[in-house]
Amino acid sequence: MIEMILMIVIMSTAVLTVELKNLLHSVGCLSIMGICMGLLFGLLNAQFVMAFQMLVFVGATMVLFVAVVMLTERGET
Image 1 (tube, rainbow, N blue to C red):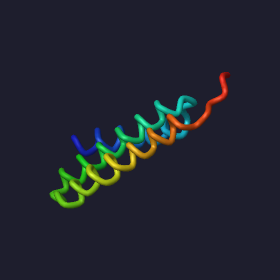
Image 2: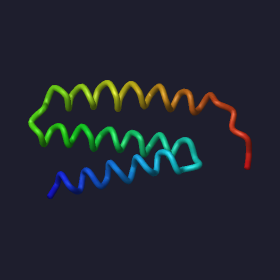
Image 3: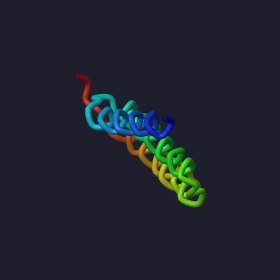
């Protein structure tokens, strides 16, 4: 049951990452998706993959994305 909930959250945040207009909201959805994927790996007893997912993909990649988003010039719409 928990696996199904995590898969639904992963799929919905993946769609929201692409569809949202605000860049910071998209990055937030991407990080939520990475955390949920890590939790799903943890439920599958793959602790090394879970730790790697959390540290590298969610941690370092999200810091890089937030820095890039903050440095880009956005036109006011």
